[in-house]
Image (cartoon, rainbow, N blue to C red; front, side):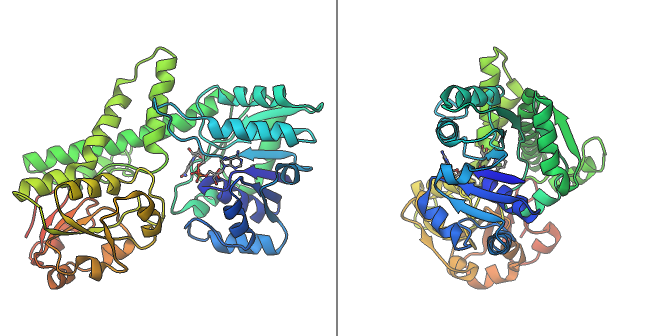
Length: 434
Ligand code: NAD
């Protein structure tokens, strides 16, 4: 099929790459000239496992193209995906600025009938708005159909997830648009959920809100376990074996971050407000997660009278492993708090340091290895469970640090191994061991 994808971020680039891998002729359009220039050379501006290889292969075989020019990008395309960002607005609702601009550009440069497919996460009713906005701005006599195809990929395994998704959701109120989208997705060979426009939009928010709730729920159970002498590892295992609960997303930690859960939970609360419906569960999920992000620094301040002048190594800055994405990463709040308390902060992340430098406080010293970060440190804080960080033996902390005290926000180490390692090991929802 002839396909255009608007927006080459985590979602658009992976969507475009994967659709080209299936043999479609795909043109990705982005307004960011530097990004497009980099992509034309087959270089991915984001870190995603397997993405560079996928892009290079399909650029070379002529299936994948990049442009900043809508007219070129939309020419002869029958399917146009919208995958621009929908960040959080000031009042918590989704900011549709990028969607609006994309719609105006589509309307200006579209020359043939199309099905517009929204991949971006948008509030319920937005797809109808998109269709209306494009149609009212169109100068030519063109038929525009609209469908919703919300994205469920996880950053860090986005390419794998696209080819192995649990389901593909396609929603439209137009039978022909649904058929076109079904055809476009047929070669993924994955279960397809067909529904109407509004239900498709709602599935995305309801899914993310549920996952965020599950994370906050287990975090609260962890905090309580710690206070009453239980171990969250055992609690989560015992809970997760119940098929009605399931064992996924039961890892206690310092809270969710990233570009989706924080903004999508706030957006669905805002959607509820617009519909005059309060959502007390989700309001408290947001509050619970905000509190959770500060929990490690609270623990440190309970353990020490002051951390003024102490050397603190922060391991892991990205909001989760295998990504360079720093959006809403817990490291933002943690490093700010440490600096306010007067600590000297060394930070290490295998891939996110360049992005971190753009948003974290200037006073942070970035290192190029774990060893360098923890050398002579008084305290180590683990914020992202990178494989490399999980594999760094506890004994090495003892060797490098002035005082081997670890506060692990991701429960990277088994308690059995930590006990007797010579490290004072604090984690989430489990007893402290020495
Ligand atoms: P992103 O910020 O990484 O990328 C957005 C891209 O759109 C940027 O490259 C930007 O330059 C481009 N853009 C903005 N306005 C444009 C315009 N008018 N024309 C062309 N390009 C334009 O965003 P993302 O993380 O890929 O997310 C995109 C959407 O997908 C959001 O709605 C998000 O909520 C949703 N989503 C994201 C994920 C994820 O893991 N990142 C997962 C599921 C859904």
